Image 1 (cartoon, helix red, strand yellow):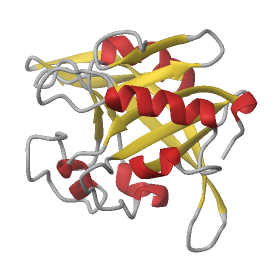
Image 2 (cartoon, helix red, strand yellow):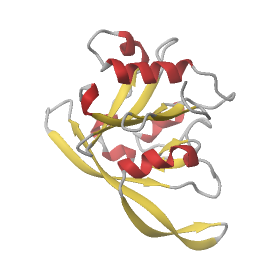
Image 3 (tube, one colour):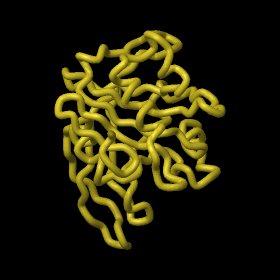
Length: 199
């Protein structure tokens, strides 16, 4: 992964049980993630600046809201990752959509089954939560990762600056039944974690 001086910003959320079904193109089995193909990021308004930076192309698209068709801003970017099986460098279009009427606070990373980097989500065990992490480098490229909590303390596994942010957010207080979600912008020192700036 990129070294700390190459990282511009990171956006992350905890993987829920429903998210595990989505990479298999199945509906969620619990109220932990929404529809069948999307990763949901809560508190969209608070993370929107990070989303706009990572998905910089704004498109207008027709969507139904409150039983009416409206035109909304849809955010487009690209993901880059090395396929674990082939070690091939892959690049794919990535789309992030604003909240729906039914889930008014949740932005959506769409089409997650299309990205092989999400294909195998490690099992969650006590003390080892799993995060989806989007790393934007200073060259603008965005690299998605799955992160096991236990690796954040392993020497050399992650850049220390990134590991520190993720560890702090996982440890921070949050509303009951809300999955950890946040971002950190290394270029501006702006942050968000579980409803407030990261301390």
